[in-house]
Length: 74
Image (cartoon, rainbow, N blue to C red; front, side):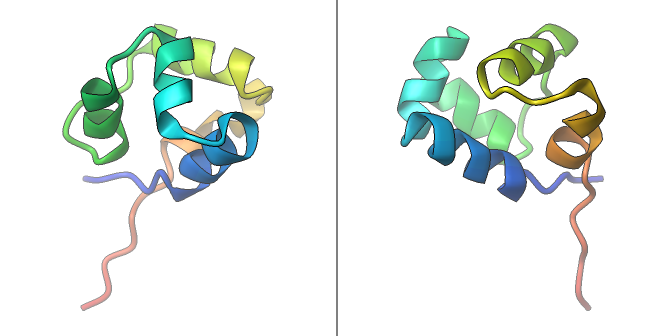
């Protein structure tokens, strides 16, 4: 199962302009953030909570930003 982080990426760019600046604010390396946004590493609950704080997301937005399933077209 893989997740679609396109909405999260858009919000990151909207608030921080770059993923690098967001990673720094999250205390993550750019490589670690890239792994998370590309589905190679999972987000921890603590990371999701921190991301919501700094991206001004409501708790009810979490499913749309962090758990939206990728649609496979075959």
